[in-house]
Every structure is written in structure tokens, then in C-alpha cells.
Image 1: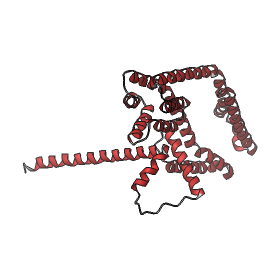
Image 2 (image 1 turned 135 degrees about the horizontal axis):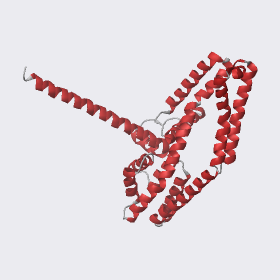
Image 3 (image 1 turned 90 degrees about the horizontal axis):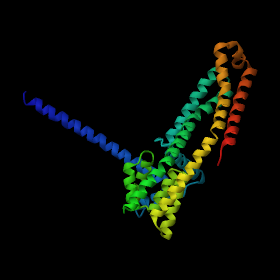
Image 4 (image 1 turned 30 degrees about the horizontal axis):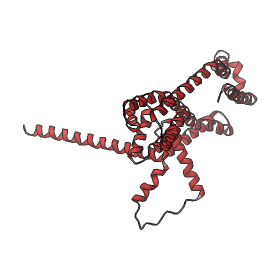
Length: 319
């Protein structure tokens, strides 16, 4: 009995170690599969050699897809790319399922109070909520990426001045840069290790993060690899150009801040007043929610308010 206790303890620790190892291995395999899928999403040229190497020699070549299937696959591929640019780790099929579920829930809840025809409109608006979320996440992620890019270029400039190569500088920047640019640089390093050239890897990064500032860098490095010149001088000029461009964008945002705030106030004021009068004087707003004519007037006001917001936004937008 005394010898049984140490044996049980050793067995429990061994089982725990096996469980932890299996869990860790599953996480590594899932990370590798996600990384491979994301690289292939933005690098179509990497898929054909891998498939040809794995395919048997006597296997017949696959027949070309029908136009409808090719169009569907291309549309799903663009959706995967759009989700990856937003940093949303969800497949296109799951995202479409989420849209259908939110749309169906919106139709069901709206049909309790209003007619089925109008419930379809509100259900479509509810189904568009995931799209709006991904849109804002993508915009915020790309804006953060653009702000981090000059500091990474400064790091690369210092690495080049110290005698390192550009690829080595990118590897060191991967370890020191914050998110989301660190993940994108990590993918560049992984693509280079898979045999992709530096220019193609950076071009794939530009497709993942379609920022014009990054496009300047990709074009400059591609020209340098074809023509030949000082890469350190090119990085210096690109960094200065990006910083000047960002300074002008911030100045434009400052000059248009008053107009943008006015548009937000004008757009939100009707809803604020409607909620205020609904709380203090429900009899004033009762016809808007229960009279058919009032409901139509309320819907027309919402549409006109949305149109006014779009017009104001276009007026203050500077390309």
C-alpha cells in the first residue's frame, strides 16, 4: 500500500504531461494550418507547385471549373481576404452563416411588432451588422498598421546601417514590432523561407494590408531589385515620404473635425429628441409607432437622415 501512492503520483503526472503535450501539439498544428491557409489566400502562385509536387504522375489533370463555380470560388476567396485584412479569424462559410442567423433573428423579432414586408427590411439590416463590424475592424486595423509602418522602417534603416541585410532586418523587426504589423512581417518571413522572393512576399503583404504607404515601399524595393541601387537610401526616402503623407492626413483631419462633428450631431439629434419625448411625453410620439401614417413618416425620416449623413461625409472627405 505504501508503494502504491508513489506509483499513482507518477502515473498522474505522466498522464498530465501527455495531455499537455497533445494539447500543445494540436495548437501548433492548428496554427500551422491557419498560417498555410492565410499564405495561400494571398499567394496563388504558391498553390500550384505544391499541388503538382504532391499529385501522382499518372493522375489525370483536373478539368477546368465551370464559370459559375469559378465565380463562386473567387467570391469566397475575396471574402476570405477581406476577413483576413480585418484580423477576424473566421472562415468565409462561418461568416456567411453568422449573417444568415442574425438576419433570421432580426426578421423574427421585427415580425412581432410590424408587418412581414417591413420585417424583411429590418432583418436585412440586422444581417448587415457583421459586415459593418468587419468593415470598422478592417479600417481600424489598417489605420494602426499605417501608423506603425514608419517606426518599422526606422528600425530597418538602423539595421541596414549596422550592416544587416533587409531580410535579417525584417526578421528582427518581427520580434520587436507591435501588432498587427508583427504578424504581417512574420508571414513575409515565412513566405521567404518557403522559397518566395522578397519582392513577391512584400507584394503579398501589400494585398493583405492594402495601405498606399506600404505600396510605396513595395514598389521602391521591386525597382531596387530590378535596377540596383542603395537599399538604405531607398528606405530613407520612403520613410520620409510616408511621414510627410501622414502629417498631411492628420492636418486634413484637424481642419475637417468641426464639419464631421456637426454631421454626427445633426444625424444623432433626431433620435435623441425622439427618445427624450418618448420618455417624458409618450402621447406625443404614440402616433409615430402605432399609426400607419406615423410609421411611414418615421421610416422616411430615418432614410432621409441616413442620406444626409452620407452627403455630409462626402462633403468633408478629401481624397
